[in-house]
Image (cartoon, rainbow, N blue to C red; front, top):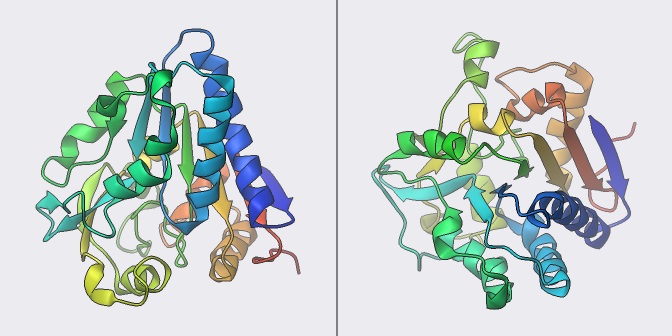
Length: 260
């Protein structure tokens, strides 16, 4: 594990964009496909702007780039929210990244993947058939979740079983609904769907590299708990990253402090 501090949000975003760009180009520049796992939320906005600029400036050939989003909101757990829904992750990715890529680079719409609440069981086999995730970008919820893999007690599920959870649809915890109301819905709880399709722990942990960015003061508590525990527990889903062979955490010290 590599723990890296940054002076501020801009530097955190710049580090993240540079890590992803370098890793992607190590394969794309050699004519090899690259599978990039994507996350959403306010943490990633500046990163995606910088990443698009790097691809555009390098005139990168993105024909072999495939993206795989962590999650998508669902209406009643049976279908994805419409693309024009204010909180649609499809909408977010197209506005924050895809629309900023020079069309001449060759990134194809069909290579942008999202878990489908109508058939979540098809997502993991599709990722595996593509060769697995080369890098998974992650944020962390205020309760320690990654994607929408919510905390569970160890008397509900074993440590090993939690690590094997597949992509699936699940109801969001009240804590996550409150968080997302505050962070992404401008305080309007009615905008936040109560279900989501989420990439499971299994494909996340199978990624060759994992990169987690943190910038909210509310993320201090789960990150400190993960560092203190030093081993995986279902009660802190992000703790499973601790044993990942290539995990990097970058956080901004102007908004979140892990020392002391």
